[in-house]
Length: 362
Image 1 (cartoon, rainbow, N blue to C red):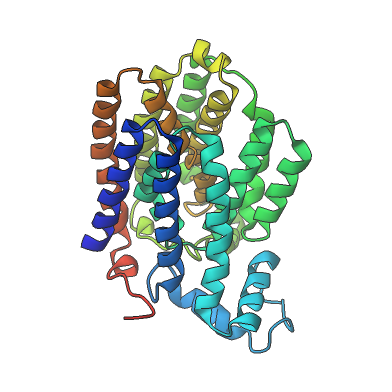
Image 2 (cartoon, one colour):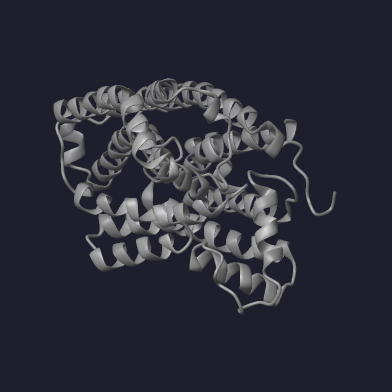
């Protein structure tokens, strides 16, 4: 546990230095160093991360590279697995290629989507370890960062292509396609609030009804297939709680940030900042999607993680909007208190998968 907290504190300190410094070179140095650390750790790990054994078994399932793609997994994922086996003949080599894809996208997208990329990376580490312990959905999520930039530039072809490439690593990436028409629209605070309230009320009301109906009509076959596909790489203890409890917990967690975002980013501010407005729209839609899909399947609701991750850029933007340095640092401290709690909760939820952090040198 100390290892993870040491990294968290290091990245938080780097973020503070970034906030205090006005030199672009400092930001590049801190961000580049942090990404390099995460990149190295992500592929030298061993027996660390969710569903490690499942992914390792899939690697050893490939006896001769390029001969069999009939495993039921996405072709992009299988391509990298086969490429890694043919070049390195070692699972660490496969992780290395995946890490190149993930952190290549992060290095390209973060500085273009926010003013403080180091802050964004720190927040990402708090909520997902910044993909250090990646599964295939993290690979898809990293590629979708490029599609966000395409949506901002009104590049529809580039957007569709990015989503398509992401779907080759996790099919749920196609859910991100709705982002394009939403990105450049400006919604009033009232519309956003009503949409959120309706989604959580409907989600609560339908949580038992929908699952009960599916169970009667299809004997649980559909949901079982959804769970089998989506739970690979996202193992957790959520099945021990009721759907209503998870819905309320997830919505409450998102509400904390939504209240902050809507308070800080008034409609007048969003009209003058297309990127900010688009990112907020994506985050709001992700919350609505989460509340709507959870009654169908706890696992299916995880597709909202693609939209939820834009919080890292919104947090960075909030700090930019604080004109006084004292206010900026005070807000950062408050955010650190909030995210360190989320970080600890996330870490303990996967305690056996995350700790200890083993490497190939262990």
